[in-house]
Length: 230
Image (cartoon, rainbow, N blue to C red; front, side, top):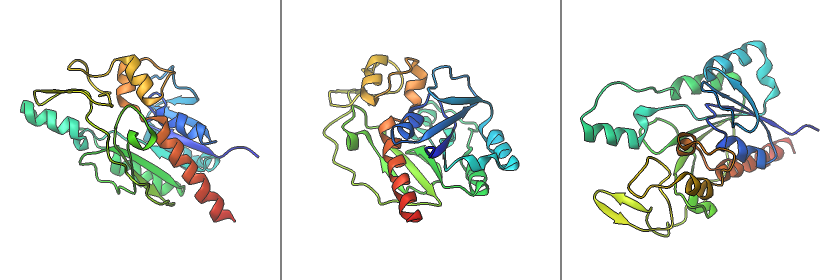
């Protein structure tokens, strides 16, 4: 029997994809940027157009789960804070709502991932690196559609994220896997901290989900699926 297949939309370099793969699933990715380091089957194109096409042709039925990490700059705490501090305005891309609408139309179980911020999603699951012994915190929220699982316990953090923040330099067990300077992580440090070895592109690493997160989600999904079939 073939392993269940997950469609990975807005896939970036494949952090989420690798986690689902490690959970025992096949993965197809889609992103509107060329991702030559993406480690699985990959479609270069608009993620929502691609999903709509799969729904329209019935090809969506080859998948058991859809994972989507739609951009929502307006909802990202880091973006909002930077814009406020610099006095910037303007609109930002928010694809969460149209992504959810298509995911609902697909009829499949789905996962929507977002960082902490103002994006309107249900926080059915919140994961951070401390749950998996990683060298980053990188909190991420996940909305689960058409399936559910119990929330994991969120352990107390062991200390600070290393680097400068608000004029204060701190040391700690976690690295800042975004930006440059101010004690933020090097490419090698980000790779090690998140368990990502197949890309050394700085921007891809700063956007990536640690594979441990979606390995946990994929395992929970497969367990819930098996229980529903029993």
